[in-house]
Amino acid sequence: MKEDNTKEFFNTKRIIIAEILNITPETLSRRLKLFETDGLINYQKKSIDKEKLKTLFS
Image 1 (cartoon, rainbow, N blue to C red):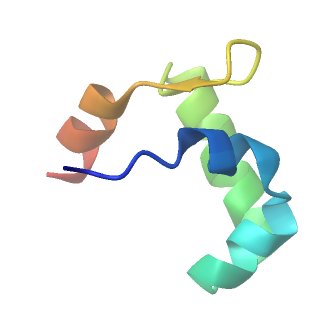
Image 2: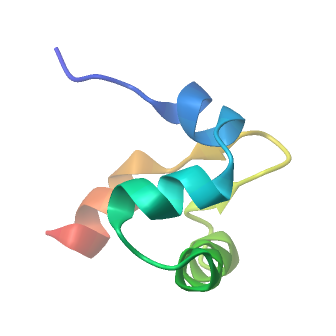
């Protein structure tokens, strides 16, 4: 069974996520904005399109 961390993603501060990924908060913010623009992340619905992400990273 795959782990779903969607809830944790939306509840964790971006600076902490950036630290975990070893990138600057600015870089993370830019990437997340692109994901939002491309419809991968929806902050209002707190949802992530995992299928699109799989396609992007495969």
